[in-house]
Amino acid sequence: MSHVLDDNKQQQVLALGRLGWSLRRIEQATAVRRETASAYLKAAGISVRERGGRPREWPPNPATTPAVSTDPEPSKPAISGEVSTDSGGPKPATTAAVSTDLAVAPRPGRAPSASACEPYREIIAEALARGRNAVAIWQDLVDDHGFPARYASVRRFVVALRGRAPAAARVVITTAPGEEGQVDYGEGPMVRDPQTQKYRRTRLFVLTLGCSRKSVRLLVWRSSAQIWAELHERAFRRLGGTVRVIVLDNLKEGVLTPDIYDPALNPLYRDVLAHYGVVALPCRIGDPDRKGKVEAGVGHAQKTPLRGLRFEGLEEAQTYLDRWETRWADTRIHGTTKRQVAVMFAEEQPALGPLPLEPFRYYRYGERTVHLDGCVEVEAAYYGAPPGWIGQRVQVQWNDLHVRLLAPKTGQLLREHLRAPRGWHRLHDDDRPARTPSSTVALLGRAKTAGAHISAVCEYIHQHDGASGVRRMLGVLALAKKHGPAVVDEAAKAALDLGVPTYRFLRRYLERRLPAPLTLRQVDPLIRQLTLYRDLIDRKTGDPA
Image (cartoon, rainbow, N blue to C red; front, side, top):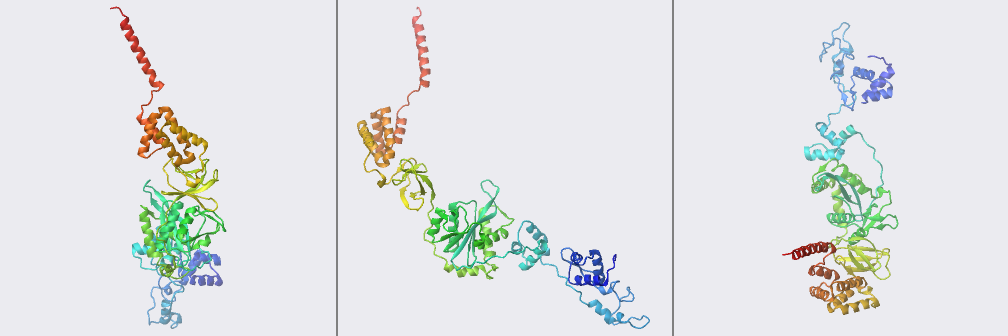
């Protein structure tokens, strides 16, 4: 060996080698170079740990190594039961008993056997490169390759390849069965978009019960207030009941104005939860630990079944996620409760609230300003508000059947109307003026003088549209002035017979029945042609015979 160590250093190196320390660690502890320490360990017959923690086996019989052998002739090993015949009589170090003891003496330290994961090293390394954790790798090995060993074997193998990350401590919040559920969004897997045919990131919705840790995971393409509420409904249906409190963060689909004491909830989300008898409890801003159970559920799904995978369709991805939920997530032993999730959910399910008989009827909502005519506009139709709201903002909710006007501060119902076609007005009977203005009375008098059917059309417009129909009555009288009272009265009779006594029908009816007048651009070429024709006739008649 290149360096000679004193007895103290030699004993330190040999002792650390027997403890299974690596050469690098021995060098850091004793300041002895690895090459020197390796030579002393070889000479003592101690296994040397190589890079990666694997011991390197030296010759199987260290007692016969030339550096430590006590045999008189290395080329002639001692035979069991035989004593050396060298001069001076038998030596204690060369007796058969001593030679046998050295041959079978147990080595210091332990040489572990190869891991059960060694045949799958390439598969595990490739999965680690895609970001999958030890649980996901073990589940894939069991499902796809029939892996016989347990999860602990994969965990040790992954820790040896990647290293161990320290776990942070968290406070555990205990809730009663059926009391609380936590909801959150996360990033879903990459799924091929059917429209663009490109892979696109989806959104992962997770609802986790606070007592049993049972989770419902759903995938969607995008999010909105209605989609957020529909996901809650689907989760409640899958669980077979509702909880009393939903804990969420302050995303816009659920909370419009964050406030720990009096948050402003999204109206649609609030009404959906009220339909199911659930109360929303938003967290403090920047406090994800309050809903740590669903945060763990989102991270579990992202790291274990979905990490590094791509799907050709959203249904395929949801099917894979549901299969993993049933096969692995529900059958696992939870780290905090030390019980199986499916067993705990079976105990919690009877405590869930009942589901309503009918699903929630969704609507759209927004804010509108009441115009000078006392109406708000919704999809090109107009709906009357109570007196005194002109110029103010009101909340509007509408679906395919009804339109509701609500007070912005109290949420009180102001007016409810049936949906109207585009351009129509809906007014409540209480909002119509008690007395007809004198100008409107004069306008109705002019309609009577124009014709009986014209007067009937104007009366109908006044009764159904009120003050907003004054301009349409002026349009009817303008048509009578343009085309003549007789023609317009005939068109008004046709409108009454068909049940559509409106200004728009009269205008279109007259445009189709009457020929359009010639414009100046159309008349000029005709005049020039007639002039040329008259000059030609004059020339012919003026020539001598």
